[in-house]
Length: 122
Image (cartoon, rainbow, N blue to C red; front, side, top):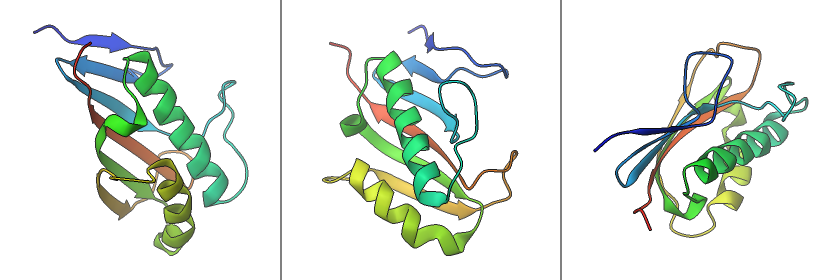
């Protein structure tokens, strides 16, 4: 099985990598299509991050419904409730397994999310 990479980045990573039926999405941050950090609170940034996760999955032919695991880093654990409200709207039924940690992030943002999807090739 040969891995397939999808998308490009200005840093040394691939936005999505397919290995057989699994799709790995690199940590997505709240940047818009022009590469600008989305302003606002954790809710606005979480929406952008999850839209970016969705777009990276689509590059590899996967969907949000196929996500089996996410890892979330929040800059401030006190934002968990607001983050969780938005997150739940992207996974309204059968949400994936998830780990969430408070962490200092590499750029001045409030949230970063990576994902793994089980997406059998059609």
